[in-house]
Length: 210
Image (cartoon, rainbow, N blue to C red):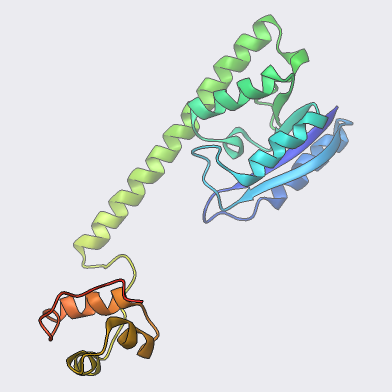
């Protein structure tokens, strides 16, 4: 059987190359031919808007199935997983995980095997989705605790020299001229002036000066 190897690493996870290596070893043991390898590195599994996955789908036209290391490397949303499996099935292609959980190749799709596949997909997809929800909740809780302790999130405001900026503005320098002087943007200067009580010229601040 000719197969496409696909790997995915979530943001903050190690690169997906070990997944591809494991798929190649699995293919060699089972006398399958790997005719293409595609990965998505540092990409969420919540949907399938991924460059590597799109290329794997194009390449499967010359193969029999797409192979992943585990179902959660394929995706974490039950709805999206089933949609992609149906897309493959409609073209006579399959999805295989090397841990033996999923094999939707046509010769595995008869009668009870198909029903078992659908049940397994729903079960493991639901578990993956539940795990993702737990991670999100833990992240939110952690951010809430950090905020309660005074931790600031987001980009730190640029440390501009207040007296110099105000002096240039009083000299009727434009926001663009001041921004160029301090290697920043007019909008950043505008925000700084707002923090400091407003434009010393007491005029309307234009933030899109050329």
